Length: 307
Image (cartoon, rainbow, N blue to C red; front, side):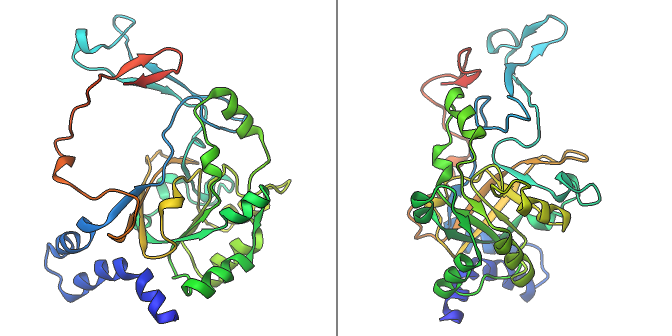
Protein backbone atom coordinates (compact mmCIF):
# COMPACT_ATOMS: atom_id res chain seq x y z
CA UNK A 1 0.00 0.00 0.00
CA UNK A 2 2.74 2.42 0.91
CA UNK A 3 4.51 2.19 -2.45
CA UNK A 4 1.25 2.63 -4.37
CA UNK A 5 0.27 5.72 -2.38
CA UNK A 6 3.74 7.23 -2.57
CA UNK A 7 3.69 6.93 -6.35
CA UNK A 8 0.36 8.73 -6.44
CA UNK A 9 1.55 11.46 -4.12
CA UNK A 10 4.78 12.11 -5.96
CA UNK A 11 3.59 11.61 -9.53
CA UNK A 12 3.78 15.23 -10.51
CA UNK A 13 7.11 15.68 -8.70
CA UNK A 14 8.56 12.74 -10.61
CA UNK A 15 7.33 14.26 -13.84
CA UNK A 16 9.28 17.37 -12.97
CA UNK A 17 12.45 15.58 -11.92
CA UNK A 18 12.93 12.74 -14.39
CA UNK A 19 13.28 14.74 -17.62
CA UNK A 20 15.83 17.01 -15.94
CA UNK A 21 17.88 14.02 -14.87
CA UNK A 22 17.62 12.37 -18.30
CA UNK A 23 19.11 15.30 -20.15
CA UNK A 24 20.79 18.62 -19.45
CA UNK A 25 19.44 20.15 -22.66
CA UNK A 26 17.43 23.36 -22.39
CA UNK A 27 13.68 22.93 -22.76
CA UNK A 28 13.20 19.68 -20.84
CA UNK A 29 10.87 21.32 -18.34
CA UNK A 30 8.83 22.70 -21.22
CA UNK A 31 8.00 19.07 -22.03
CA UNK A 32 6.97 18.52 -18.42
CA UNK A 33 4.62 21.47 -18.70
CA UNK A 34 3.14 20.27 -22.01
CA UNK A 35 2.68 16.67 -20.84
CA UNK A 36 1.64 17.24 -17.22
CA UNK A 37 1.21 20.73 -15.85
CA UNK A 38 -0.80 22.04 -18.80
CA UNK A 39 -3.41 19.36 -18.06
CA UNK A 40 -3.45 19.86 -14.27
CA UNK A 41 -6.15 21.61 -12.22
CA UNK A 42 -5.12 24.82 -10.44
CA UNK A 43 -6.85 25.80 -7.18
CA UNK A 44 -6.29 29.17 -5.50
CA UNK A 45 -5.75 28.67 -1.74
CA UNK A 46 -5.61 32.40 -1.02
CA UNK A 47 -8.03 34.92 0.48
CA UNK A 48 -8.61 38.14 -1.44
CA UNK A 49 -7.15 41.04 0.54
CA UNK A 50 -9.69 43.63 1.72
CA UNK A 51 -9.37 46.38 4.33
CA UNK A 52 -12.07 44.82 6.50
CA UNK A 53 -10.70 41.28 6.68
CA UNK A 54 -9.74 39.58 9.97
CA UNK A 55 -6.52 40.85 11.51
CA UNK A 56 -5.15 40.76 15.04
CA UNK A 57 -6.29 43.83 16.95
CA UNK A 58 -2.72 44.51 18.04
CA UNK A 59 -1.84 45.31 14.43
CA UNK A 60 -4.84 47.47 13.63
CA UNK A 61 -6.85 47.79 10.41
CA UNK A 62 -5.68 48.47 6.87
CA UNK A 63 -6.89 51.15 4.49
CA UNK A 64 -7.08 51.13 0.70
CA UNK A 65 -7.20 54.45 -1.21
CA UNK A 66 -6.94 55.62 -4.81
CA UNK A 67 -3.37 56.72 -5.52
CA UNK A 68 -3.07 60.50 -5.60
CA UNK A 69 -0.98 62.57 -8.00
CA UNK A 70 1.36 64.52 -5.66
CA UNK A 71 1.47 67.41 -8.15
CA UNK A 72 -2.32 67.96 -8.12
CA UNK A 73 -3.47 66.31 -4.90
CA UNK A 74 -6.13 64.48 -6.93
CA UNK A 75 -6.54 60.74 -7.56
CA UNK A 76 -5.45 59.40 -10.93
CA UNK A 77 -8.48 58.57 -13.10
CA UNK A 78 -9.04 56.66 -16.31
CA UNK A 79 -10.76 59.71 -17.78
CA UNK A 80 -8.04 62.24 -17.02
CA UNK A 81 -4.85 60.17 -16.86
CA UNK A 82 -5.59 56.97 -18.77
CA UNK A 83 -4.94 54.78 -15.73
CA UNK A 84 -5.70 54.37 -12.04
CA UNK A 85 -3.69 52.96 -9.13
CA UNK A 86 -4.25 52.07 -5.50
CA UNK A 87 -2.50 53.09 -2.31
CA UNK A 88 -2.40 50.41 0.37
CA UNK A 89 -1.94 51.55 3.95
CA UNK A 90 -1.10 48.29 5.71
CA UNK A 91 -0.41 48.27 9.42
CA UNK A 92 1.51 44.99 9.30
CA UNK A 93 3.07 42.37 7.06
CA UNK A 94 1.04 39.81 9.05
CA UNK A 95 -2.01 40.33 6.87
CA UNK A 96 -4.28 37.96 4.98
CA UNK A 97 -3.05 34.65 3.60
CA UNK A 98 0.61 34.81 4.50
CA UNK A 99 3.95 33.13 4.96
CA UNK A 100 5.70 33.65 8.29
CA UNK A 101 9.50 33.49 8.04
CA UNK A 102 11.28 32.42 11.24
CA UNK A 103 12.59 35.97 11.81
CA UNK A 104 9.00 36.92 12.72
CA UNK A 105 9.90 35.73 16.24
CA UNK A 106 13.64 35.11 16.14
CA UNK A 107 15.99 37.87 14.87
CA UNK A 108 18.83 35.42 14.26
CA UNK A 109 16.66 33.47 11.79
CA UNK A 110 15.79 34.09 8.11
CA UNK A 111 13.63 37.04 7.06
CA UNK A 112 11.22 36.90 4.13
CA UNK A 113 13.83 38.02 1.60
CA UNK A 114 16.26 35.39 2.87
CA UNK A 115 14.07 32.38 2.06
CA UNK A 116 15.51 30.37 -0.84
CA UNK A 117 13.83 30.29 -4.26
CA UNK A 118 13.64 26.49 -3.92
CA UNK A 119 10.67 26.94 -1.59
CA UNK A 120 8.47 27.81 -4.56
CA UNK A 121 7.17 24.37 -5.71
CA UNK A 122 6.73 21.38 -3.39
CA UNK A 123 4.58 18.25 -2.88
CA UNK A 124 1.39 19.17 -1.02
CA UNK A 125 -0.15 17.09 1.76
CA UNK A 126 -3.62 17.98 3.10
CA UNK A 127 -4.61 16.60 6.51
CA UNK A 128 -8.36 16.99 6.94
CA UNK A 129 -9.67 17.50 10.49
CA UNK A 130 -12.76 19.51 9.49
CA UNK A 131 -15.21 16.96 10.92
CA UNK A 132 -13.43 17.05 14.29
CA UNK A 133 -13.41 20.86 14.29
CA UNK A 134 -17.16 20.90 13.68
CA UNK A 135 -17.57 18.95 16.91
CA UNK A 136 -14.91 20.96 18.78
CA UNK A 137 -14.08 24.42 17.34
CA UNK A 138 -10.91 24.53 19.46
CA UNK A 139 -9.66 21.13 18.36
CA UNK A 140 -5.91 20.50 18.58
CA UNK A 141 -4.24 18.50 15.82
CA UNK A 142 -1.93 15.95 17.46
CA UNK A 143 0.50 13.27 16.31
CA UNK A 144 -2.36 10.78 16.22
CA UNK A 145 -4.03 12.75 13.43
CA UNK A 146 -0.82 12.70 11.40
CA UNK A 147 -0.31 8.97 11.91
CA UNK A 148 -3.95 8.28 11.03
CA UNK A 149 -3.41 10.18 7.77
CA UNK A 150 -0.27 8.14 7.03
CA UNK A 151 -2.04 4.87 7.77
CA UNK A 152 -4.50 5.71 5.02
CA UNK A 153 -2.29 7.54 2.50
CA UNK A 154 1.31 6.52 3.16
CA UNK A 155 4.31 8.25 4.64
CA UNK A 156 4.51 12.03 4.26
CA UNK A 157 7.37 12.75 1.82
CA UNK A 158 10.38 14.71 3.03
CA UNK A 159 10.40 18.30 1.82
CA UNK A 160 6.64 18.44 1.49
CA UNK A 161 4.33 21.25 2.56
CA UNK A 162 1.58 20.05 4.92
CA UNK A 163 -1.65 22.06 5.07
CA UNK A 164 -4.20 21.33 7.79
CA UNK A 165 -7.79 21.58 6.58
CA UNK A 166 -10.19 22.71 9.30
CA UNK A 167 -12.69 24.71 7.17
CA UNK A 168 -12.21 27.60 9.61
CA UNK A 169 -11.49 29.82 6.60
CA UNK A 170 -15.13 29.54 5.54
CA UNK A 171 -15.92 31.92 8.43
CA UNK A 172 -13.69 34.55 6.84
CA UNK A 173 -15.71 37.59 5.76
CA UNK A 174 -15.18 41.05 4.35
CA UNK A 175 -17.85 42.46 6.68
CA UNK A 176 -16.00 44.78 9.11
CA UNK A 177 -18.06 43.88 12.20
CA UNK A 178 -17.91 40.13 11.69
CA UNK A 179 -14.24 40.32 10.73
CA UNK A 180 -13.33 42.18 13.91
CA UNK A 181 -15.13 39.59 16.04
CA UNK A 182 -13.46 36.75 14.16
CA UNK A 183 -9.96 38.18 14.60
CA UNK A 184 -10.49 38.70 18.34
CA UNK A 185 -11.95 35.25 18.92
CA UNK A 186 -9.90 32.40 20.40
CA UNK A 187 -12.49 30.05 18.96
CA UNK A 188 -10.27 28.41 16.36
CA UNK A 189 -8.52 25.07 15.86
CA UNK A 190 -4.83 24.60 16.65
CA UNK A 191 -1.88 22.58 15.43
CA UNK A 192 -0.34 21.04 18.54
CA UNK A 193 3.35 21.31 19.34
CA UNK A 194 3.71 17.52 19.34
CA UNK A 195 2.37 17.36 15.79
CA UNK A 196 4.70 20.14 14.63
CA UNK A 197 7.74 18.45 16.14
CA UNK A 198 6.77 15.13 14.58
CA UNK A 199 6.27 16.66 11.13
CA UNK A 200 9.59 18.49 11.19
CA UNK A 201 11.82 16.16 13.19
CA UNK A 202 10.46 12.80 11.99
CA UNK A 203 9.15 13.63 8.50
CA UNK A 204 11.45 16.51 7.51
CA UNK A 205 8.70 18.62 5.97
CA UNK A 206 9.47 22.08 4.58
CA UNK A 207 6.69 23.85 6.48
CA UNK A 208 3.09 23.45 7.53
CA UNK A 209 0.09 25.72 7.03
CA UNK A 210 -3.27 26.30 8.70
CA UNK A 211 -6.45 28.27 8.07
CA UNK A 212 -6.60 30.45 11.24
CA UNK A 213 -4.28 33.41 11.85
CA UNK A 214 -2.41 31.75 14.72
CA UNK A 215 -0.81 28.35 15.13
CA UNK A 216 -2.52 27.47 18.39
CA UNK A 217 -4.56 28.82 21.28
CA UNK A 218 -2.00 28.23 24.02
CA UNK A 219 -1.23 31.33 26.18
CA UNK A 220 2.35 31.53 24.86
CA UNK A 221 1.65 30.39 21.27
CA UNK A 222 4.05 27.56 22.01
CA UNK A 223 3.86 26.04 18.54
CA UNK A 224 4.75 29.23 16.73
CA UNK A 225 7.50 29.96 19.26
CA UNK A 226 9.08 26.57 18.65
CA UNK A 227 8.81 26.84 14.86
CA UNK A 228 10.31 30.29 14.57
CA UNK A 229 13.17 29.69 17.01
CA UNK A 230 14.11 26.49 15.20
CA UNK A 231 14.28 28.03 11.73
CA UNK A 232 10.92 26.90 10.33
CA UNK A 233 8.47 28.99 8.32
CA UNK A 234 4.70 28.48 8.34
CA UNK A 235 1.65 29.45 6.28
CA UNK A 236 -1.37 31.14 7.87
CA UNK A 237 -4.81 32.13 6.61
CA UNK A 238 -4.91 29.40 3.96
CA UNK A 239 -8.26 28.93 2.16
CA UNK A 240 -10.18 26.57 -0.16
CA UNK A 241 -8.59 23.35 1.04
CA UNK A 242 -11.92 21.56 0.68
CA UNK A 243 -11.22 21.22 -3.05
CA UNK A 244 -7.72 19.76 -2.73
CA UNK A 245 -7.06 16.00 -2.58
CA UNK A 246 -5.12 14.62 0.39
CA UNK A 247 -2.27 13.53 -1.91
CA UNK A 248 -1.06 13.93 -5.45
CA UNK A 249 -0.87 17.74 -5.71
CA UNK A 250 1.92 20.27 -5.73
CA UNK A 251 1.78 23.69 -4.12
CA UNK A 252 3.24 26.74 -5.81
CA UNK A 253 3.49 30.09 -4.12
CA UNK A 254 5.11 33.49 -4.18
CA UNK A 255 5.35 36.56 -1.95
CA UNK A 256 6.80 40.09 -2.10
CA UNK A 257 10.51 40.16 -1.32
CA UNK A 258 10.62 42.93 1.29
CA UNK A 259 14.12 43.52 2.62
CA UNK A 260 14.18 42.29 6.23
CA UNK A 261 10.47 41.48 6.02
CA UNK A 262 8.91 39.56 8.91
CA UNK A 263 5.85 38.37 7.01
CA UNK A 264 4.82 37.68 3.44
CA UNK A 265 1.55 38.43 1.68
CA UNK A 266 1.51 35.06 -0.04
CA UNK A 267 -0.54 33.51 -2.81
CA UNK A 268 -0.70 29.72 -2.69
CA UNK A 269 -1.84 27.68 -5.69
CA UNK A 270 -2.49 23.94 -5.53
CA UNK A 271 -1.56 22.15 -8.77
CA UNK A 272 -3.62 18.97 -8.81
CA UNK A 273 -4.21 15.94 -11.06
CA UNK A 274 -6.54 16.46 -14.05
CA UNK A 275 -9.35 14.46 -12.45
CA UNK A 276 -9.68 16.85 -9.49
CA UNK A 277 -13.25 18.19 -9.36
CA UNK A 278 -12.40 21.78 -8.45
CA UNK A 279 -9.96 24.17 -10.07
CA UNK A 280 -9.24 25.38 -13.59
CA UNK A 281 -6.87 24.37 -16.37
CA UNK A 282 -4.53 26.60 -18.36
CA UNK A 283 -6.34 27.92 -21.42
CA UNK A 284 -5.70 30.02 -24.50
CA UNK A 285 -8.25 32.40 -23.02
CA UNK A 286 -5.72 33.24 -20.31
CA UNK A 287 -4.07 35.76 -22.65
CA UNK A 288 -5.42 38.13 -23.60
CA UNK A 289 -7.81 38.02 -20.67
CA UNK A 290 -11.47 38.60 -21.56
CA UNK A 291 -13.01 41.97 -20.70
CA UNK A 292 -15.81 42.23 -18.14
CA UNK A 293 -19.28 43.54 -18.85
CA UNK A 294 -18.94 46.16 -16.09
CA UNK A 295 -16.10 48.53 -15.22
CA UNK A 296 -14.15 48.67 -12.00
CA UNK A 297 -15.13 51.65 -9.85
CA UNK A 298 -14.28 52.86 -6.38
CA UNK A 299 -16.79 51.99 -3.65
CA UNK A 300 -16.45 54.47 -0.80
CA UNK A 301 -18.43 52.33 1.64
CA UNK A 302 -16.30 49.21 1.07
CA UNK A 303 -13.02 51.04 0.62
CA UNK A 304 -11.91 49.23 -2.54
CA UNK A 305 -12.79 48.85 -6.22
CA UNK A 306 -15.69 46.68 -7.34
CA UNK A 307 -17.44 45.95 -10.62
